[in-house]
Each structure stands twice: as C-alpha cells, then as structure tokens.
Image (cartoon, rainbow, N blue to C red; front, side):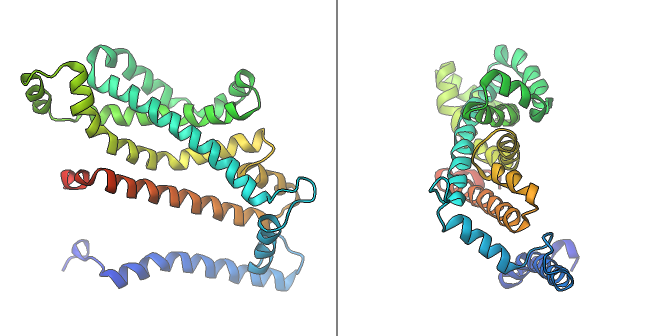
Length: 271
C-alpha cells in the first residue's frame, strides 16, 4: 500500500498527536536540567518547579499592591478585549463580505477596497490608533477589528461568489426579492464559513491583542509578559505563553464544535 493511502488507527493517531509535544518537553527539561546543574541561578530555562511556583504566586496569591489575583485579572482583561474585538470584526466582516459578494453594485467598490485594506500591516497603524482613540480599551479593540475584519470580509465574499448560480435563479423564479435572497438563501450558507474564518483568524487576533497590551496597558496577558521581560523572568513568561496557547486552542475547539452543532449539514455538503 502506498504511504499516501495509509491512515493511522485511533490508538496510533493518539500516539502520533502526543509524540511531538512529549519530544519538545523532553528536549526542554533536559536542557533546563543541564543548565541549572551548571548554574543554579540560570533564568533562561527554568525548571518545572520554578514555573509552578511562579504560577502559584500569580494565580493563587493576592497581589499586595492591588489585592487582585494577577493571573486571573490578566486573563479576564485579555479575553474581554479579544471577545469584543472578534465580535465586532465578525459582524462587520459578515456584512461587508455579504454585500461585496452578493450585490454587484456594492461589490464593485467594496472588493478592491477590502483587498487594499487587507494588505495594510495592522501593527503599522497602531500609533495612529493610539493617537485617534487614546490609550484606553478602544484602541486595543480597534486594532483587532482593523486587523482581521478585511480578511474575514474577503473570505465571506469569496464564499458568496462560489454559491451555485442556479440556487439564486430558482429562488428568484419563485418570487424571492433581493432581501429574501440575502436573508433566506445566501446568509445561511455563509454563517458556517464565518465561524471557520474566525478560527483561521484567531492567531492574528491574539497577536494584535498582545502587541497592543505590550505597548499601552496596565493589565492583560501581553502586558504581564512584557513587564517581567526586563527581569528575564522566564518562569513567568513561559507559563503565560503556554496559557495563551491553551486559551487559543480552546477557542478554536469551541468554534469548531459550534459549527458542527449549529450547522450539521455543512460538513455533509462539503463531502
């Protein structure tokens, strides 16, 4: 049997999933043990015990200055900003993509505009956002919105253009108006693709959030990472990076499950 036609069974698949992560952890802790044996004060590769102590200090011990549990406060602040940014971007991207991909009169000006906007590096306009919106929450949310909305809109537009023309013609033959076509025929086809687009843009959204928090913030996961970097506190930075990765993975998993539950027909239609 050719290699391209071989598929792992369930136990083998689980093993193959775990193997690269186990290998990375083995390499890290081997290197950490070697460095700490040579220099117990080394900060570059902290041991598991050092990282657990740092997490316990931040997550389960009140901060003397603020009285807050910093780890959970940072998490709540970052997730709030990210959730608002993703929500606004999803709504704006859906509306723009739907208009550009469905109505030719809107698509003519919107499609080139969305293409140009998607090419602008969002981090390059971050100083402009701080000047226009200030250093508060709005500028951080707007960076996420500006960063991912054009890409979501272009994806939705492309999906709208790929809908079978016969489907739209049949609906019009049955007397459907433009609004009926958009709301009853096109929109249901685009909603699962919107969730997939959000999954694809999660990494970029986190990137923009961390960048904004690192530059101008008083809390948040990105703020904490860049605050402690001056002390080379890798025992804090590495758990925070791992926590961000876990949160992003859980969000991706949640969106995937939502797509399956809300639109069970979508996977079958693709097949």
